[in-house]
Image (cartoon, rainbow, N blue to C red; front, side, top):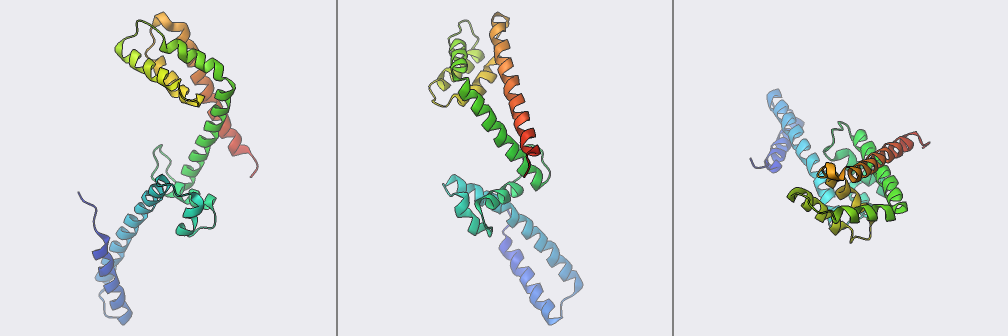
Length: 203
């Protein structure tokens, strides 16, 4: 199904508005125009977050977006986007989406800080896992992705493949799997604590 063109609907609504100003329009046409207006408003509202995301992907800063969105600051522009965009994690209100995004960022910062302080340990574990022998095809593929991440200067890129490879390790590598599990649990805890601290911090 193709997306409806709102131009015709807007033109029809405008004609009813003009007729209403003259006082010669039946109420059923006014009701139909109101329904059409609501549909157009919903459609146009759905375009705004798409356009904001496209502008951001093209390199536009929040500060540059602010005047286009009719808000006064970069913070307000980002907040508007978070409130408008569809939820991917179940939040039902705009404010819940703002809170969820801020929780995620606080968690990311806490985990990144911990990972940088434990860079040597993480790189050692990644090296051990990527060098394992006797892995099945799925485990080997996961370990190879981890080995590729070792070449990245940002140690946080090791965390997702370290967590992913754990599911592929057999009983022969139980100790290593346990260490990876402990890291995953610790980073999850860091995220929860960071979100909790952010919510209780005085504004």
